[in-house]
Image (cartoon, rainbow, N blue to C red; front, top):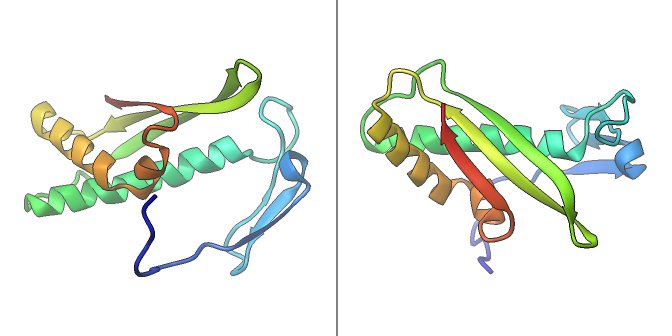
Length: 138
């Protein structure tokens, strides 16, 4: 297990009610109603929040990989993130797909950037070896 030597930021939330509840951050920038996936109820779910957080972080890691090569990511850089909740035997599990769009970047270079970002993105590190992950270039 990797222990952080210097904390740069701590996200803090207060959550009640689980999947039928609400979550808000200590700075009030996040204030969401939660609902189970597929329930039709108002609110988001943990899988959507995870997909949003991971894809935002991954784009940041792509930007760092590009900057090392003295190039800029296209303004249209985007990720369609999909996080599946499912069952494995008798327990719940996740799997994910990041569909990455780097328009105007040579496909070989795009693959290098994606692979490097996957090594540095904290979400990718946290999931590595724990869930199935597919990284697709759109």
